[in-house]
Length: 197
Image 1: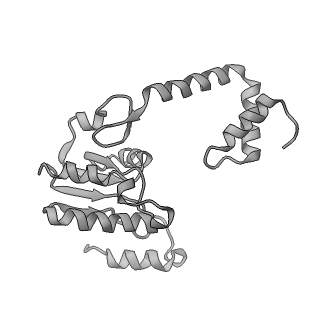
Image 2: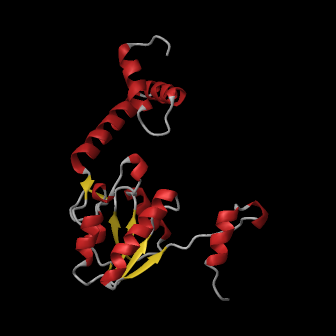
Image 3: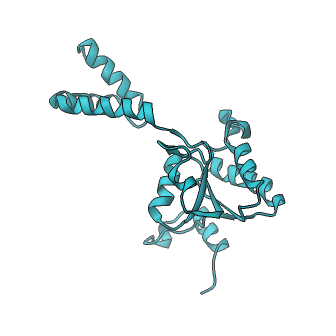
C-alpha cells in the first residue's frame, strides 16, 4: 500500500477485514469518508450504537434490540417454526412475507471439514424448544450448499422421532430461467420435486 498517514492506513486495514472488501474498495471507502467528515461521525456513532444495543434473542437467536425479539413475543403462529442458518436468512424469509410462524437461527451450518459440529450450533436449543409440544411443523430453510444440506439431513433425523412434521424449502429451476442453461443437479431436483397441476 502507498504511504498514507497512520490513521488512514489503519482505517483501510479495518475496512479490509469486512467480508468482500479488498484493498481497492477499502481505499475507495476511506477516501469517500474523508470527503464528508459528517459521515464519519454518523458511521462511528451507528457502530457504537450497534455494539451497545444489538444482541441475539435468547429464544430464537435472531439479532434484536429487545429480548425476546418482536417475532418471538408477537402474535406469530407458534405451531410453525422455520430453521435458518444465519440472521440474514431470517430477514430474507421475512421479506418474502410467505412464512407467518416463528424462527430459530442456528448461527451457522454443519461443516466437519471446517470444525463446525452440532455443539457449535444452536441445535440443542432448537431441540429444547421442540420439547414443549407446541410446534407441529419445522420448516428447514438452510442453504442449498453441501453444508446446508448436511445440516438439513441431520436436523431431520433428530426431529422426526419427536412426531413433528419436518418440511424443506422447495428448490429447483428459478422463475424466468431457460432450461438449457440450468445445471444438471438443479434439473434433477426439480424433476424429483415436481407437483401435479
